[in-house]
Image 1 (cartoon, protein in one colour):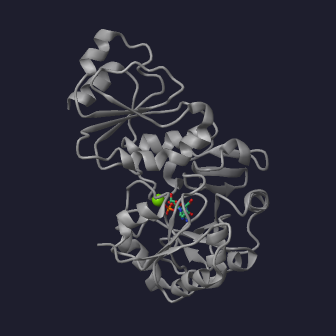
Image 2: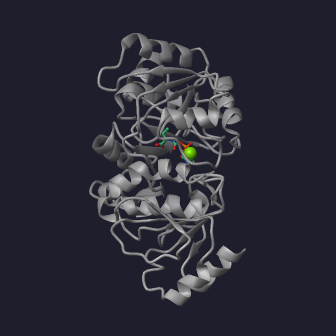
Length: 355
Ligand code: TXA
Ligand code: MG
């Protein structure tokens, strides 16, 4: 039975008494799930080590996976980061804050080390969601918040998702309807050359690159993947049902005979309305939307992944978009949903289906 209090707040006209209540609850060291423009976050006072520990316990998240500190502006930023922040970071915050950009910058010495898992850098974000921002201001402290899901599961884009995962483990959820982007923030680190995307997210790399030289982690020049967002595991964002990921258009040219070898009941195939993919007769098609409207695909992605987790489904197959821009972030999540293996030939798919 869910025990968390649900506060329903209108994002266009947030009730100040409800905002004050959520802020005071956070300030007092409790766990409050809050709406943001990306996904729902599981918030706690970032300056209260016991409250921060409670986040890890509620999610079942390893202590080695650091949290993002959420701020409402420069004053709270100066409580979590060493200021001034590096120039490249400043340029990106000027362009994208408030918004779905997380910067990884040297931490403030007083920030409890549990927030950064002992790392010298802190991840910081200034959300654009009016309710998130108002709650942070009301709390008057930076708010540590991972996505409000159980560890390694699909991130929540509604208060119902939060309650399904954590309803019996948290104090309150502030319900402001569905998240606008539906994908987490883009996490960016910095070196002398510019910005390094550590996790794809709601702001595409191409947009960052208009402001500072930006590369993807793993591009030539990066030593190795050890700088990747810690805890950004290979299996993440996963439905409970076994899930495999296939390359874009893998089935487009499959013959009837090839399709017949793949046929079995209990399979859901999640693909796109704007591609004409032939499927084996017994598979069920679920639409992820149209690749030509990728923002809508991102918006609905986690809700669709959650909805496919049903008792009568034995295998979920998700198809990559193959796109750039926001498509990279969608494909990153779809790849992790399939434990970071991309199947790109029909024989391997037949093996995966048979096993
Ligand atoms: O949109 C979002 O980012 C949402 C909302 C709630 O703000 N939050 C979110 O938090 O997705 P979480 O904990 O699910 O993901 C945080 C990511 C992880 O990949 C983590 O490894 C990375 O940020 N991160 C946090 N601190 C870091 C640090 N000091 N260095 C590098 N990566 C860090
Ligand atoms: Mg998460």
